[in-house]
Length: 448
Image 1: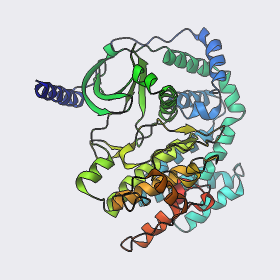
Image 2 (image 1 turned 30 degrees about the horizontal axis):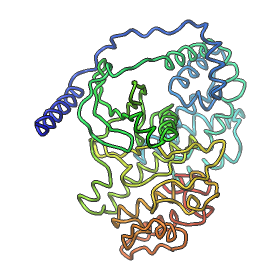
Image 3 (image 1 turned 60 degrees about the vertical axis):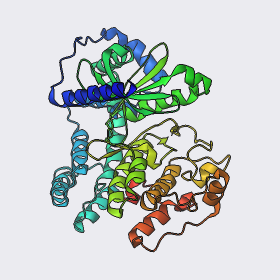
Image 4 (image 1 turned 180 degrees about the vertical axis):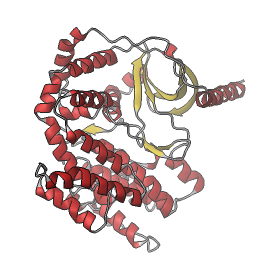
């Protein structure tokens, strides 16, 4: 009987998946009605209390960005910096080198050279020289215009942003944020299908949102289990971290949260659905990865980590088991239960998985930041290539021995590794944070 129920659950889940692909999204059954504009005063105070009335918080949200852009385009005096920013972001997404070279030249001619000739270019000489030096050498890295972005932000953060806060566009922003806070979802808004994963506090189900037909993963944390295991802080932290990484421009390499609600006995997170298993599973089933395969997954994980680090979040639990694949073979970082915000205070706690924790994490009382993730990243790459952590070479399960080796042992890399791979891993696994790859001020750019 149990087998029959499992088969029926699988069939129901597969049918829902097919339906979500073939059936266009239905119209929402409820018409969205924004609250009265008078809600601005209350929401403004709430957002200030949450420290969310600042340029970076608002501009990095899609809603805030669009409303800020609308405000700028409504002004009598044009704001060329915003258009310049959009051109740079378009350039950064171009994969073809020749196309990137062409667009880079157009951006330089239209936004830099034209202003230089008319003596209206208000950017630092060092910034101009940086771009000119690369273009002269015919080099077009994706971060070519990165120095300009911070200067653009400096301009957009100033009086222009203060005037935006006083405008009707910010009132509209407050209306949407108020609506967002008051959305009431229940289990009735989803068709819940079979279990697709289990964790310490509950299960993950495949589900389909009733009004749109879109498939998600529903992570249900059992309140009794959380209380029994004294996991209240972990559960709340995961909710906060998911909110931080899911706000603003979507990151295609992190399992993000779309909704959250609770029932009398469960906390429910509605997350991106990942159907391809995790890297640990594929490692155990198919053996070690080739260097080319590792490079592909590493690039996507790097972008996911950088998305967190830009938001002052250190992940602290990077390992193959937490890297999930979607149906197209792309990966996303999952499970942010141990992630931590280091924007105001650096963490000191020794948390993570033994064999992946950085030396500074293992050293009690030592403060750390995103540096810890780059060490864990090096450990994870090593495991994908060799089948074990660099500090579990003899398959020891003694956590104290693993930690001792992490703190004292110099990793010996096989001769079969290419020079480029050896340089990468040696840089990532450096015990000295100041010499570690990714920790010298340029983050992921230094690794790429």
